[in-house]
Image (cartoon, rainbow, N blue to C red; front, side, top):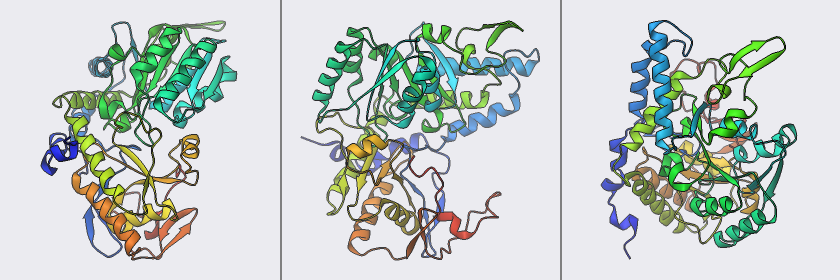
Length: 464
């Protein structure tokens, strides 16, 4: 049987990168040996770079920016039209049904917190223990305040067994909502959404999909899957301008508690009462992120315009190349949730037993110009399930990833295990950094006050 990697040459694999260039795709970074290399960005699962087309669209509309919805001025009317058109584009990208509503949010976390606030009082919510914190904490911590109960269901050893466990739990008692990941931010795996929806709907349970890792990489259809809600982020969909979306059934969103109290969300206010708008205005109080919404819509249009299956094939080939390369290295172990899951999206997590993941990530950056993620990826229960509570290393790909970046990672890890780092590393403020790092900072305003060693330092979001 011919594999994806065998079918696609390097040129074929990199074709999508040429079709949809990203901002900064040729940015070089300094290495500790004094040379420079083009940055190998293998951290798309955290935040993806902007498409060049998205940046151009933002530049185009910035001169037209003004207040929306309540402005009589010409530019206010233009901005309102652009904002509402962006809403329609975003809804269309996830194949929303005619009666669905799209709410512009900040990101997936924001979207799921909003949804948690409109689940009817007294309802039960079911969530699996493999979820990103964005699809776990809102349900656990909002339960008391919003009057619903949340059950966290442990997964089983296989997809088939996990689906059976879900079926049994849904039949055991009534749940208003089941919320599941569309693709794990740790391994790229997921339960088959169509089957999950069928199981849930058979028991009268709605389904919300955390689409943060699914929507930008494979696309998603509310209509075809039957899912009731999907949430996703602009910063993972090549539009890092601060907007995300929640798209789905209107009824809960029309009547549930407004997400924010403020102007634009109300029809009438008196000292003794407030009359709220229906969705989406009900949950978009204050001045909305017009530019962010337009940027996200442009990214949606650009991804939708790719040849059918091109993005899927691109990422599948890159991931297969990465799996093959890492599997050949003695001393590297690839994490997997289930042995019977469908092909994952372009996210892969691995460990180097006996070696601190933060040290390995610092080495990859300082000596090879490779950006990966280390830590527990805001998915602590899943990392514990994978016996990686001390952290792991994640490599993730996207439209701008080339085969060279994947091959560089494999070569760098091989060198690390066979020869070892060329520089010394130490822990500073909990993070691995190069000892006496002499790499220069990028010449950009805002970094001039930092010491050179700060270029390798990590911030407080180590576990993202």
